[in-house]
Length: 157
Image (tube, rainbow, N blue to C red; front, side, top):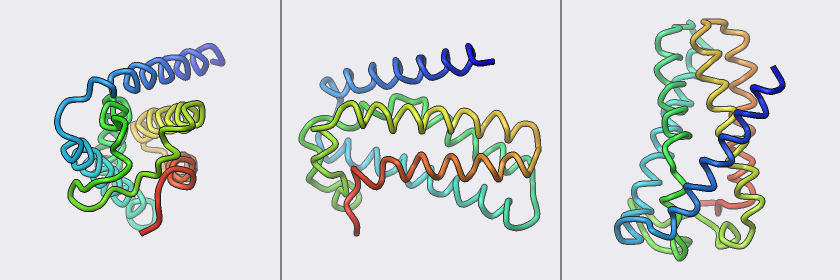
């Protein structure tokens, strides 16, 4: 089991590394990249809200699976390509909240992105089991991985 975890973490790190490398060749104007990543994060927030509603209310396995799969898909989409240098200022749908520290601390970016990827994949896996208690516990871990990036790299509104 440890080998699977190590392999998944290595794959996530490699995927992120490719995403970050691709960011130098990102398509679109800076404002396009900001808008696209804002859209991705809004979609993930909506999906997190759907999971939370099911944890707190009547649990619907199918809704949780759908939401978890959306989060997993975005986590594995190469989202790092939407962070080209210079997109720590500017406007997409609204002003970006990305701190310039994001471009100065690559090891931390890799660390938080790898953690998010791992927790998103685990959420999708657990959602498929229908085990509400396991999903609730994983929801906390997934949320903590989001906070792990928000705290150092996102400006307050």
